[in-house]
Image 1: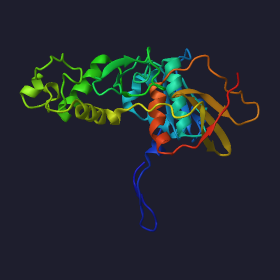
Image 2 (image 1 turned 45 degrees about the vertical axis):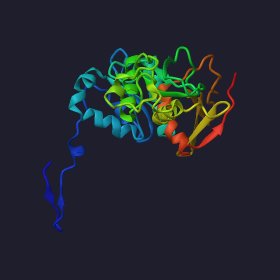
Image 3 (image 1 turned 45 degrees about the horizontal axis):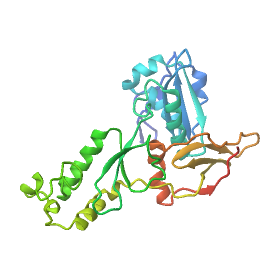
Image 4 (image 1 turned 180 degrees about the horizontal axis):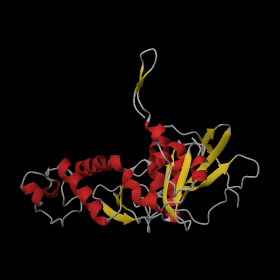
Length: 296
């Protein structure tokens, strides 16, 4: 289709959508059924295996954009139909996407596919405390105070701590990065990159306060409620309540006739992806929250 000029002299440029052709090997009915509403979508192959799971506030538009992306040719060639699941809003789509990727392990969702064993830095309240690396398998990050940062490896945690120490001219020995020798200056002090806490030239209390302040922006927020909370989203008269407890997504309550209740899980653990999705909007008061009771 070429550009054309109307009878009143207006130039009309071609719309790329007018030239769009649907792939013959992907079931057209599954594509036509996609709604222009929030939710998740799943590309499946001929054996019904999930290839890719995504989310969007407009499922139809997002899926069609995949079909126009040459970089995704390998995934598209293996696809045979697209499944979708509606949510009442963007938060619900984000939470459901994260959960399903972990459960289904789709081939092309490499970033969120693995359930990660996270570690963090813990700094105790004593002024002579040094940061230590602790793991999610040993501590519930949702209820443990004085934790800073979320890291996939011990190496990543140490690298971040080392960067902070260098930037703030903290003492590596007093920060647990090298062995402290009583009365001997650390190497950083010898090259004027430490204020001297290791040899008493900076009070230990001052060094501790500077270290804690430097870590503060990475603080893991302890779950601020006594029990589960619901995040309310509504769309076209449909209400969903996404139930969260201790930064763990339990499930969503659909306020429609015949909907199944959300039950108390046998086990819940701090989930890093749920935490990252919710912590900022929750602290900013951007979410509509209400207490919920779970079925047993």
